[in-house]
Image (cartoon, rainbow, N blue to C red; front, side, top):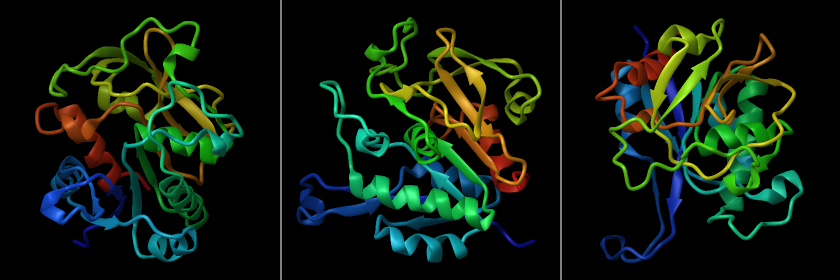
Length: 241
């Protein structure tokens, strides 16, 4: 059986690190690699590069995975940076936006997590709350630090007829590490899960010929202890076509 090749959009570490002679290095959290391997896929890291490389990268993979990381730059949705905006990387934003558009153009499924979930929304025309303090109905703790990721933080309600409901049921507990969130949802996306304070926690594509699944939480941090979270990787690698 041919194993699907899953392209992981890699991050770049810019901070000083003596083990690497203070040079930047490309990386991905190990949980993504392990989750894909366990699901029967072959992970392939794609380093940040020029957006013009995106078409060639996407052509060589079967599916695209977008992990978490830096805040999404508000310049992508024509806002000025607000005081509580965190670290951004326009280099990463530009490259991954090109990957998203190429994956859609080439008909390759996308699994987007946390920052990746937010960037998909922005790339398709949506906007973000630069910090949850901008959301007037904010009532649930969405950044679980310093609680370890092995423990779920808050509940989600899942749309009953969505692909996510078959994996999680209509009520579940998830971890949570974010301070940005979807504000205006892109027209081509459909919300399929919400927190109790109505922050959008998962989306899928409205268009039948475009396969997108995005979640706000981090299955790569709990996939070894929670079968539902490994089930997300299994579904993406084995069934999401």
